[in-house]
Length: 436
Image (cartoon, rainbow, N blue to C red; front, side, top):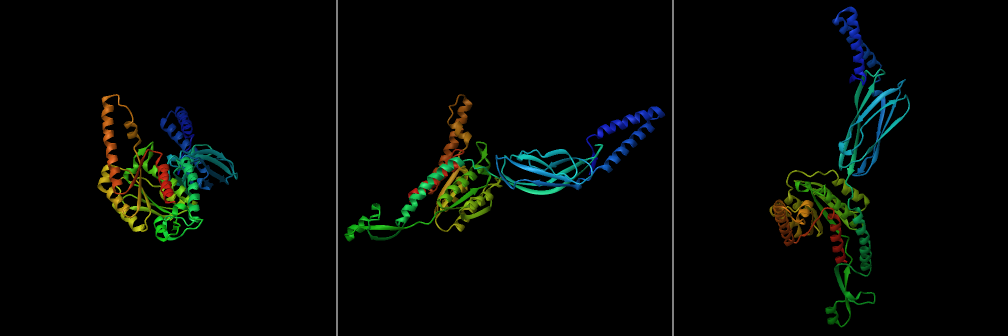
């Protein structure tokens, strides 16, 4: 594409002056305008002919493949041209606004030299960003004309969510180390949670393992022995429906739930347990089989980072059917959703009841921050009193929904923003300590 350069206005002004001068000399505005227009077209045409094609410029974009929200990284543009003279070049990249990067650069490039320009990427939103085109503009020597085209430089930037509760989870991971040491020491002496057999007492046995009824019957000290338990499998089910779009402390419930998944997987992996993940809304989307290791945690993050809450109601019945079909052995199932009372009553409660009939179910949810603030604030006006009354009714409905789920055998963690991950890990470690 050929267009006007940044000094085209000066060229037009000069041509207008020529036009006026000729008109005064020959006493004819028609002739003056014709001469001025011809002068402008001639100058513009010559400058356009002398303008180098943008396609002659070698351009490479160097940028990271992945980032974490809230971090800073650099993107480079490397330019080189083989023309015989300097070129006035401007480029504009196709960065998304949420990357918070300066996407334009203008410079004069000397021939043959490699010119490197940088910008900082500061993503404040997670997701998958496709950066497909880069616009290149070359201005002519007189800066009256320019040539421009779009260059296909396709790249994908993966921005994963920040681990917001990393510090709290690290403290719990250290506590898990002590739990794991205790668990291993129990197993070393024939410990565990599943009964194996009765045998006579030996000096190495623990006193608490004596079976007093068997001892009374036989007249000898008899102890119970247990098979060492297998490492636990945890299945996390992440709701991606409209309930998860609401914010708490400026972050969507979905983001809080993702943070909880990362925290739970980090601690469970440290102990040796395996964590799987299923995401769903109207349909089941991503399923990550239970496993462990650093790479597996990366797979969990990859399954979540570009999720956006769907506007429709999640199909909790289909979710329950999928969980029951996939998870045959009794396991810990963690469902991260929200406790909207009408949803619990209509569909979510029955779905969780079905899962709880075969598995240990924990539901994690984030209490609305604003609701909690209002509930603890003393009203000073009639409007405040009415608002407090409405909030109290809403909170009571939420508690009724919680009691309904508990009656189905479901454990409920309805906690303030920023506490879901740590509280979920606390509950997990508590259950582990009871098993040991």
